[in-house]
Image 1 (cartoon, rainbow, N blue to C red):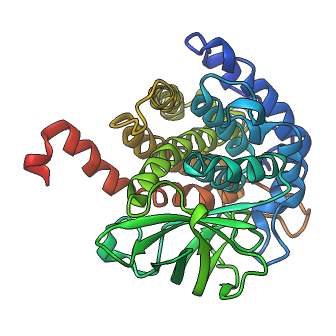
Image 2: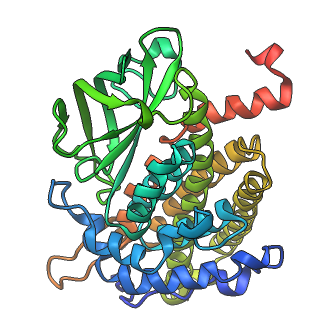
Length: 414
């Protein structure tokens, strides 16, 4: 009979296999700071978050507000509200990786609050930013980002959107439905992409959600994984939005949304690296301790080579997302083609490493809890969580097309 895996946390192989030799000085301490914050505020409840049923009361407030209190939500911002980083995208992505190492779904929550929304609010008017950014950074208020609809996700062209913002004398009236919206069950505001009612264009709006007539938040979606990243529909019926809550120019919202999603892709790449690293560490721990036919699994060349290859791939994926983030910090808001390369590569890798780590653990990798002893295992959570990384914020197949357009030329690829 196979011996159960140990319950102690595995060694962080990253600390001896990877070296921060190219990072700018302003972000060198981010990883250690976030790792400490994660250990204090997220790790104690992470497994409960990963296994819970999505309900309106299940939002991970303790971890959310704990990370905010540690200053992790300030990394994306400059000026008096921010953490003082020059390389804000890079610092935020490093934070995302460290959060994802402990909980991929909390990395999704962080991505919504501190990457997608943070990028979009750059387009808000100064008085709106002055009012809302301190509440976002402190965790006092929760924010959502909404582009996806029941029949519009990868395709965000105006003709695909059914949520319409009609211009009025003092702002906009919005009617429609958004789907798969992270944080929406508790959010105070949502940054929402709408089809502009007056032209073949889109407008991005900042819409208050709580106690707002015409706004309805649906029940939480129940998903295979990412149980801490609770999603739900947002339905709007003749909802008034004042003119100063337009993010950017009316009719120019698609560019705002796509810029935010490009940054989000790099963040999800970082999350993929965190998930892959966690799975690799569990696999290394297992092959060093489990015996099969009288010898350690780690003595078998097959697993030596598989895990060595995965360690190499994680090194490549980490360097790639950091390069994409650096390009954005240097002024290229698209970060392409590295953003698409990083996201598609790192998230595929997360699934590959999770699959192999589960295989190394055998039946224990497939188990959540042993009935006889109460022992619990994490790999089934990692395996469930990893899949969505290949789907959201740009399905990997779409991103391959983006890469091909840069490589071959849009005149050929379309």
